[in-house]
Every structure is written in C-alpha cells, then in structure tokens.
Image (tube, rainbow, N blue to C red; front, side, top):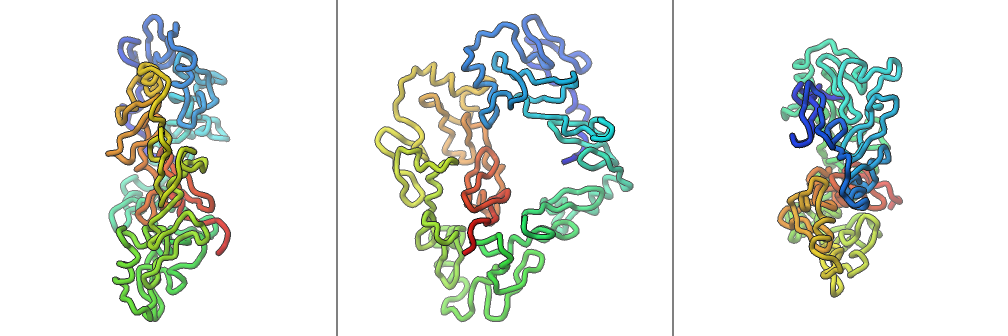
Amino acid sequence: MAGILPSTEQQHVVCFPSDRGYCDCGTCECDDGWFGDACQFQEECNLPSKKSRELCKNQQGVVCSNRGTCQCGGCLCDNKDNRGLVTGRFCECDDSECLDEDTGEVCGGHGQCYCGNCYCAAGWHGDKCEFQCDISPWESKRRCTSPDGKICSNRGTCVCGECTCYDVDPSGDWGDIHGDTCECDERNCHATYDRYTDDFCSGHGQCNCGRCDCKDGWAGKKCEHPLSCSLSLESSLRKCKGTSGLPCFGRGQCQCGQCTCHPPGDGRVHGKNCECDDRQCEDISGEVCGGHGYCSCGRCICEEGWFGKLCQFPRSCDMSDAQSKEMCETADGVMCSGKGSCHCGQCICSPQEWWVSGEHCECDDRECDKHDGLICTGNGLCNCGNCECWDGWTGNACEIWVGEEY
C-alpha cells in the first residue's frame, strides 16, 4: 500500500554505534574488523553457532527469512544483480515488490521503497506511485475526512480524495464497510454469534449505515429483544451480563435474559452467561494447557512442577543461570526486551502489562484487531500483533464465521 513519502531525515542510512564506524554522506565507513551496509557484521565471530542462528531468526523462527545467510548473529541478505533489493534486520523486506513492471523503476520513479511498500511523492498515488493526482494533498484529505474527523473513518485509505474502504466480507459484493468516507460499518448490525451470513439485526430489522432499525415487536441494539418478553430490555441485558461488561461475555447472543453461546455445538464455550471459554486453554497448535494440566472454565490447572497461563513453564530445570539468561537475551543483548523475567531459558512477560507477549516479550498484543470491543473478537489468539483464529473463524479480527451452517 502506497503512503506519504517520509521526511529526508528518515531516509538517511543508520549506522551501528560509533565504535563500529561513522556515516559519511549517507554511506557507512566501517572501522577495522567490521563490514556491511550498516557496519553490522564482525569479521571475526566469537558467538557459538547456535546462538548466532537464534539471533538471525525472524518472529516466525526462520533464519534470515530464507533470503540470506547468517553471519555472527546478523543476516547477510541475498543481493542479486547488485541492486540491494532484499533488506531488513532479518532480510524480511523484499523491495522488488516496489518495481514498476513496465519500466523496472522503483515506485515508478515517483517515490521511495521501504520494506516492499512505496511511499509516494506529493501528487502521486497507487501501489507503485503510478497515478498522478490532480488535486492538492490538503484537498484530498478534506474530501476523505469523515464526520467524526478521521480519515476514511480509520476503516479505509484515502487515494486522491476518494476513500477505498476495507472489504472484510468475502461473500459480499461491496463489503461490510462502505460510504463516501467509510462511515458505515454493517458489521455492527450482525448478531454477535454469526457475522458471516446476511442475517442482519438478528433477522428482525433493517441495517442502515451500521445501525439497526427494528421491526415492530423487536428492540435492542441488534433487534435481539422481543417486546413480548416479560423482561424489559435492560433487565434482559443485565441477566445476560452476569459479572461481565458485555452480554454473554461477548461470546453469545442474549434473548430475553437467556444466552445462546456461539458457535452452537462447540462445547468449549459454555456457562449460563457463556463465561467459560475453554479455547483459552489452547495454544496456537491446539494443545490444551501445554500437555501439563487440564482446563477448568477457560483456566489451566497445572500439574505439579509446571506453571504459567498455559502450564508452559517448568518449575525447575537443568541449566545454569548464565545459560538461562543467554537464551532470554534479544539480539541487542536486552533481557526479555526489558519487559519480563527469565526462567529456565524462557521469558516470563510482565503480568502487569497483559499486552506484552512473544518469545522475548517483544510483541504488543494491543496491535491485534478488535471487534465488539474484544481482541480477535474472542474467536482467536493474538500472536505477536496478528490474530490467529480458531477453527471456523476468519477475518483480521476473527469476526467472520465460515464454519458449518447451523
């Protein structure tokens, strides 16, 4: 996705600390014993090969993203045709994606490439900066500003004064998000338990720009409450909330004070108010409590000798403190990214900062998409800023049901 061209200061080459070299007109001049575009490689390496390879692994655990070789804990990226198109600390950036297919120029000659994305100069747009805009950037921004003052309601991108809305519904012709400034979000009209079908407003109303207009006899934000119910809408919601701030803990549909947990038939979500979600005991591979415990109402009860949210940490291990700390250090030598403690060679991230995660506590789970106020809509796990959805769910926020009909 093309963006605004970064400032000149952001375009300068960043060299490693001054004890390795200095920057001269945008080029790093390395001291003796160091080499590389940023003086990041040491000619003589004292690191063990295993430690070196660990430092070269990206977040997915792939050494140099399979686009380079590991040298003393640093990635030496493949450089075909001497164009330097593969870059990044772990060779994760492929700038060949910025090349114009017709001319071979980077970003059509009207922008600069950063990690495979074109940042266009003023007056140009498109994935490869191939289109020229006939209005000023300020006019473009004005046209794309939604009634709440946000650009494309934070649900789309502004291209030459027009909003391109994010299409989150693979089954629809125009998607759930629409409007001149993407101000309409039809996802808000879907029943909590099923966002894949066209059953808007619980089947009892019409969705207009993300708001439900209910048919006679029905009420509620999503027309889920029958007026024939002996309870008022407020009483019904109060009974469904229990100790949560959301009806049915955001995991089901409330009707007349009763919760129907979603998806129906999945026994892992249960309880009077759907308060128990045993999926929370599973890791991304589906293993329950790391194989070292059992699940009780969404919480792991660990066997003796194990602890942690998923019983993933042994209480004792056969390694020295020095060996343990070495495995917990990041590539720049910081213990657990400064956001956790080290135990048996594994980082235990700070429980006070729930959003911190990752092998070295390097991830921020607040970056995961939300819907209905829940991270990954409660239908998946946040894995280093991205939602990993449970079976049957998809979408950036795991908000779309694609499993069997029910």
